[in-house]
Image (cartoon, rainbow, N blue to C red; front, side, top):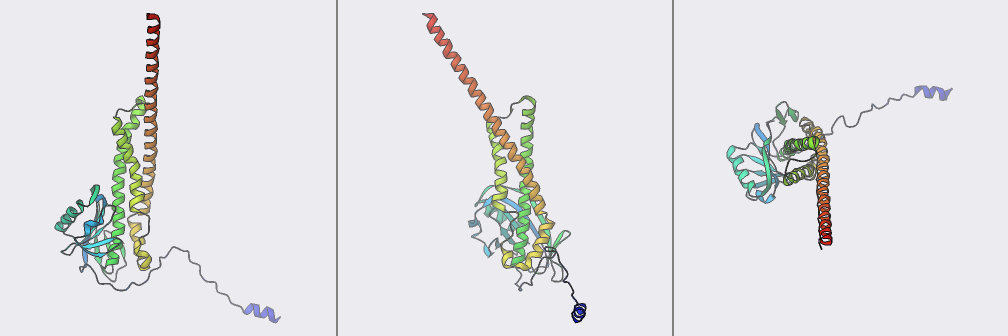
Length: 294
């Protein structure tokens, strides 16, 4: 009886279960001096080139690395990425022009000024950090937060750059497919076909090899307190969804380029077979002429 009474007295309150991943753990960051003293300023990202040599930043004051953050001289800040993206904070038109002129001497490949992302940044210690309509709210315009915003905006700009290129490559592949469907041959020159195939093959390499769109920024490993802000920015710019859609387009372009290469090989081998048969026929005719002519 005593054991039964003891069992009845036992009170067990189960711990409520929480689903992992619903809440991003954040930690309070140590205060850092803001690199931009304003409460509101502009931020814009452009693709200046396909690749930028870091020697281009030698004449600017370097504030941080990975990514490189430099001071432009009159209150503007710029983040420079090796894969060709530039993110400008509070930069004037003169500062932007000077930076682009300096970058041009140490860059390779054409950029695309039209692939631009722009927003306004509001600084308020009381607001939740992250996107809010057309703005991005931050508690302090320090080095770490500007680097993180630059990472997201640069990746978004690179995706826009690749989306525009993929659309252009699709426009090139459509008439080629129409030629095959109508008469089984290409109307374009072989050099134009090879150039189109090369652009299709390079597109996937540019996305996966240089930008690392889905990679976690290195500064988050040492500053986990910014993880929540990064997750909200990443979701607002739809980096994962856009990268997945672009990956499907690039896969289609890769299959198209393989088909074009195989078709070109078939036509080349067919012409070679015809040339060999003609040579055999000519040799046979000459042999018959030499035999019966005498």
